[in-house]
Length: 80
Image 1: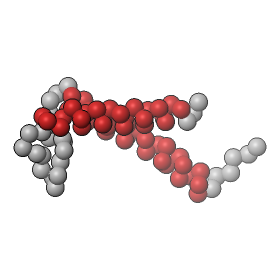
Image 2: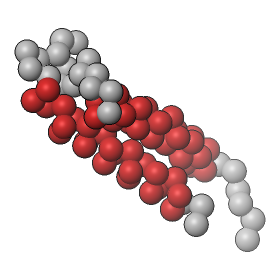
Image 3: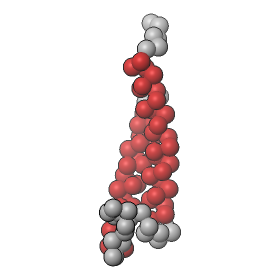
Image 4: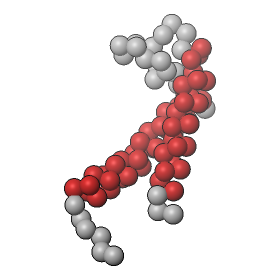
């Protein structure tokens, strides 16, 4: 069976390759929030953090870790 390069294949590859920077960004954000205690990206609303960003920090960090984990599962799972 021969692989035909058409727009659907090109779009699929672009979306697959876009998972790499997305996973990196989510991992970096989770690292900043959980380990470095940098709450500048926690629960932003109109570009401003809330009065007590520590309240939402754990949830935001876990959401970023979860998203990064799903992206890595897809990155590893597609070639296999």
